[in-house]
Amino acid sequence: MLAIPAIDLMGGKAVRLREGDPRRATVYADDPGAALRDFLAAGARRIHVVDLDGAFAGRPVQTDLIRELVGIAHAAGAEVEVGGGLRDVAAVTAVLDTGADYVVVGTLAVRDPDAVSLLCRQYPGRIIVAIDARDGLVAMAGWQEPTTVPALALAKTAAIWGAAALLHTDIARDGLQCGPAVDATISLQRAVPSVLVIASGGVGSLADLDALRAADVRAVVLGRALYEGSFTLEEALARC
Image (spheres, rainbow, N blue to C red):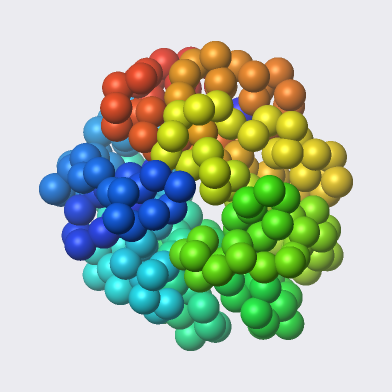
């Protein structure tokens, strides 16, 4: 199982939100580059970067900082996936131009599925579709806007497009360390066995990682648990 530490950017700092609420942000690092170097030193092979300012503005905001972080990661031989505010093709292209290995699109996949289908063909192996769900239904626009799109339906469609992976986040668990949505994540993975499904949200202990691995989940994003010291990245990598 691939363990992917997260760096969420807001105001140039590394933060974590609770349930995606910008009013419930905790700042963990004034220098995201320093946080990144710590993860790389611990052995991270992929980093998950989110432009939270972009997610709420609806357009990329932290592009310069993302380019800097990508350079640091690549110098250490690690990959970077970037999401947040990628609501049109131009925004996706702008982030790919930073050198990011993967981009994560969520809102665009719901609002303009033809565009994402085309992006998957234009950039094979580099487009990750976010399945951000609350009670089984997709939410978009920084998780602030509910939809009637079932998570499973979007997952199956993204697989047809040729998405590189699916990033499944249970919004109600994100940032709370209350345990991951193991059943929902593995249900998506079984529905699209040829596509990597990345679990996100709720991990708070090494036992949570054991549960995900036992269910054959193949990748997981780690956030608040690392920043709060619930376990170290070295410990997580040893369990994965």
